[in-house]
Length: 432
Image 1 (cartoon, rainbow, N blue to C red):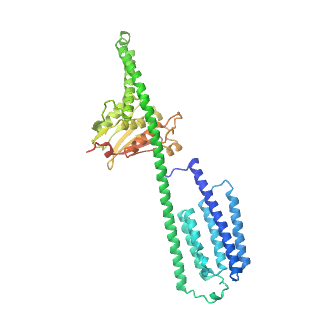
Image 2 (cartoon, rainbow, N blue to C red):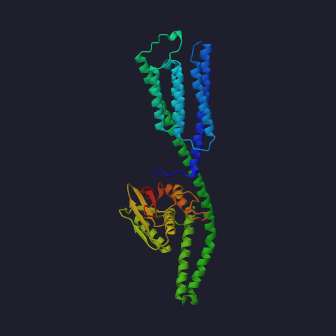
Image 3 (spheres, rainbow, N blue to C red):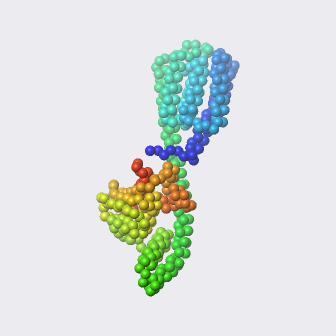
C-alpha cells in the first residue's frame, strides 16, 4: 500500500504542476507567434491565398485560451495531468484547424504534431501520453481526407497516392511511438538517478549524525566510568555493614542497586567497544541459539516486563559473532515495544527463510501514528513526545542497514504494532 503524501510531500508536487503549466503557456505563446509569422509570410511574401479570417480567428482563440490559462496559473490550486492534457488537446485542435485550411497533409507543418507529442511525453503520465498519440494520429488521418488545398500552381494536381499517404501515416505513428517510449524511459532513468542520489545524501547525513552521536557517547562513557566504579565500591561496603546486612529488605534493595549498576557498566562498556575502545573485550564467537536465548534472558531480568513470549521455530543453530551493536539494536526495539504497552505481554518471534534471519516484535499498544510510519527510523521522530526521542530506532535502523538488512514497522489489524527485523545470516556468521 502506497503511503499518502504528507503536507511536506504534497507541496513540491503542486509546485511542479504549476511550473509545468507555466512552461506550456510559454510554449503556446511561441507557437501563436510562429503561426502568425508563418501566415503573414505565406500570404504576403509567397503570394499564396489563405483564408485569413478563419485562420486568424483560430489564432485568436488560441491566444484567448492561453490568456485564460495564465490567469488560472495565478490561483493557488493544484494542477493535475488532466488539466495539462486538456490544454494540449486545445493545441491539437487549433493546429488541426490551421492545417485544414492550409493543405492538410501536404503542408510541411503537419509534423508539428510530433512536437506536441514530445511535450506531452515530458509533462504527462503514460496513459495521457498514449491518448495524445491516438488523438494526433486520428487528426493526421482526417487531414488526409478532409482539407482545403493550398492555392499554389505547383499543387494544382497533387500526386498523393494512397500508398504515399499510408506510408506517411505509418512514419508518423512510428516516430510518435518511439518518441514517447524513449522520452518516457529517459525521464524514468533520470527520476531513478535522482532518487538514488537523494538516498545517498540522506545516508551520508545520517552517518555524519551517527558519528557525532558516537563521539558524544564515547566521551560520556569515559566520564561515567569513574563515578560508576565509586558507586560500586560504596554499595559493596554497604552490603557488608551490619545495619544493612541484618535487614533483608535493605539487603535486597542493595542487591537490586548493584544489579542495575552492573547493567550501567555493561552499557558503558558496550558504548566504548562500539567506539573502538573495547578495553580488551573481543567479539564473542557463539551460536545463534545461544545468542538469542541469552539476549532474551538478560532483557527479561533487567526490564519490568509482564510477560515476553519468545519462540525461535526453525532457526538453525549456526555459529555467529556476538556483536554489542546487534544486541543493542534488538534491545532498543524491545524497549520501545515495552514503553508502548508496559502492562501488556510482548512477543518475539525468530525465524529463518532463504538464508535470512527474521525477528518479529509484536506489542499490544496503541500502534504507530500514520506520520510516524512514514518517517520511521528518522532521528527525533518519536510518538512519545520527548525531546530527543526516536534516536533508539534511528540507530537500530542504521545498524540493520550496515549489516545488509532492514527494519520495517506496521500496525496490526486488531491493535498493536509489529516491527520486523531482517538480517542476512552471512553478515552474522564468522568469515571462513
